[in-house]
Structure formats: structure tokens, C-alpha cells
Length: 96
Image 1 (tube, rainbow, N blue to C red):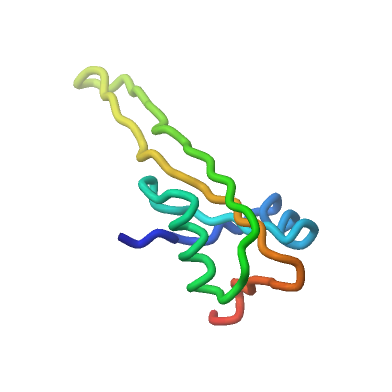
Image 2 (image 1 turned 45 degrees about the vertical axis):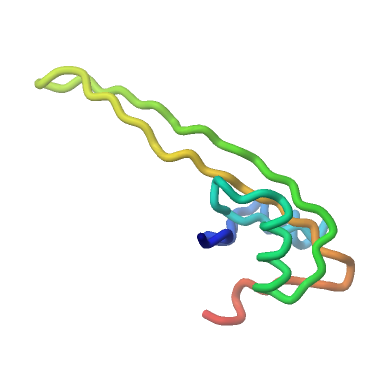
């Protein structure tokens, strides 16, 4: 089970990383805060102070087509906002 799926790089997440030393990741929906903390520390070699998680449920959609009503949904996702100790930074662009 891979805990960290990918980092989230948006304007809001970049501003939080520059100003508050917080980094946002898309994580496995079954991972808890302790597993996320260990995974970030192992992957990036930093000290994690705090982990905040956000669960997003699936988005349900409905379409009206010739064959009738089509129902569907997207997958549920989970985000983790990780606060790193002062003096530590994570560089997402060093291995491109």
C-alpha cells in the first residue's frame, strides 16, 4: 500500500508552503495520520510537526442520454496537509 500518491501543487498549496512551511499531498484513503507522518519523513528526510487530513467523498453525476439516465460517480480522495519543522523544506522540483 503506497501511502503518498502525489504532491498537490496549486497556488494555495504553494503559498502555504512558502509562508507557513506546510505541504499538501494526495494520500491513500485508508492511511492515518501516523502512517502519513512516517511516509513523509522517510521520503523527504524532514521532521514533521503536524498532519491535518481532509476526506473528500465521491462526486455523483447524472446524464440524460438517448438510452436513458446514466448515473456515475468519481472516486473518494483524501488530502493531507503536513506541517514541517522550522528550518526544513521539501523541494518537489529537484528530481525533474
